[in-house]
Length: 351
Image (tube, one colour):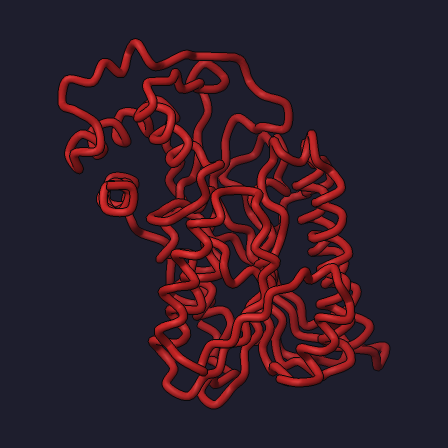
C-alpha cells in the first residue's frame, strides 16, 4: 500500500470537465469529504449531449457556495488556462475535460484534436510553470484497442488504437510521461472502463437504449450481442480518483542524475465483463421495476442484433491488481445495483 503524501485539506484543486458526468460527481465528493478544500471547475458546456443534464449537475454543485467556482471556458484556450492558474494557483489538477465517445470521433475528428490534444497540452504547460503537486488525468480503456490478451493490464502494449479517440487518450499518456521526465511533474493517468450511473451520458448504451425503448424505437445490439463490457459504476470511479489524488508518484533521481519520471497509470474498472445481452436483460428488468416501462413491454420486438461497428472492440476487461495493491480498493458495485440506481434517477428526472 502506498502512503498518502498529499493532504487535500486547505488545498485548491482544479477539475476540468466539472459539468461532465465524472467531473461533477468528483467535485461533489471532494466538497463533501474535505471541509477546507476549494474546487475550481472549468467546463465549456458544449452541446455534444443534452445540456440540461450538465445544468442539473451544476445546480447540485451550486449548493456549496463559494467553495466551488465554475469558469465557463475551453481548455484549448491557453489564455483561459493561464488566467485560472494565475488567479487560483491550484496545487492539484484533475483533467477530465475531453471530447468523449468512440463513434463521434469517426465523424467529428476536429473536436478530439482540440480538446484532447491541444487542451491537454495547455494543462501540462500550466502544471510545468506553476509547480503543481499532482496532475491526475483521464485516459480510457479504449487505448487497449482490440488486444487479444485479457484482462487488460497497464503494462500491456497499447500501440494499435482502433479509433481517433483512443489515439488521443494514448497521446495524453505519452505527453504526460514526457513532461514528468523533463520537468519532474508527478502525474497519474487513469484508464476508465465504461462508466455509467444516474445523470450520466446519453450517448452511452444504457442511457441511449432507455431513451429509444421509451419512444418505441428499436435498439441495436452490436456484434450480434457478442460484446463484453466492464461496466463501472460512477461512485466506484470517483472513489478510485479521490484515493489516487492523495498519492503523487514519488520524485526520484536516476543513476544519470536526471529525474526518474514520477509517472503512473492505473486501470479503474469492475474486473468482471458482462455480455451485452445479459446487460440488456438486466436493464429491461430494472426499467420495469422502476416504472419507467410497463410490465408487458415487448422487448423482443424492439431489439435488433447487428454487425460490429467501426471503432468498437469486442471486449473490455480491466486488470485492477495494481489499484488493489497500491490503494486497497477495487470497484465492486454490481451491474444490477448500478442500473437500479440509474432507472430510479431516470424515472424521477424525466417523470
